[in-house]
Length: 250
Image 1 (cartoon, helix red, strand yellow):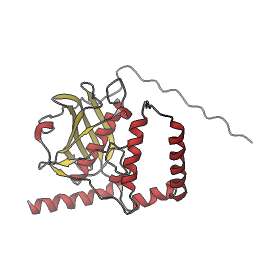
Image 2: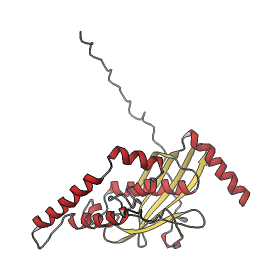
Image 3: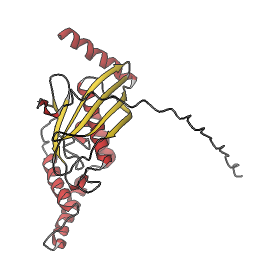
Image 4: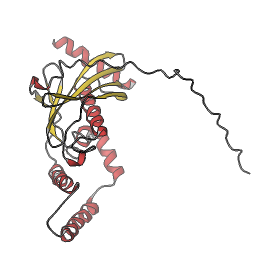
């Protein structure tokens, strides 16, 4: 016996009935890239197996092979890399095992696709924390992050913001999950040139946290963003304890 097909009634959206959020106003003063460096954060040493050192060499290959042009026969090199990959695969834990250990041991930062030293997708960005809580990182993105010619892909810019806003919230004691990320692309973000990513937390209301960020290239504003993050209920007590301890120390 087969079940009757499910009928889904079409939804009609009347013109003008979609409610959009107001465009955010981003205060660029605290996000000025010229404010200088701060205290290094989210740094950790390599593990005994030398994973970070290995990943760094894979990043070199990633960068060189993106749109690669070589004056040599790649066949022998490919065979050597294949043998190395086979050896690593034979010695590696499964993805499920790695995921379980990484979350149990809270290796969040090292696996981040922006700052993670064990993630080959990451540049990796190296953030510094200023005295007022603003987060800052200077980096140069290569061809592997390109969208339009000479420009960082817009999705990569969004990823930079999501990571930066998330980390600045973390360092303020208000880690949350992204609910929305509102971006304005002001001008192209260049590849192969230094850029500065800045972020700061701007407001907390219960479990809701708002943060803003900017990307600059030289003195030119490339993009701004505002994100809303929500702290899971079980994290709220930890945030309040962090806030109260800070008030006592102050």
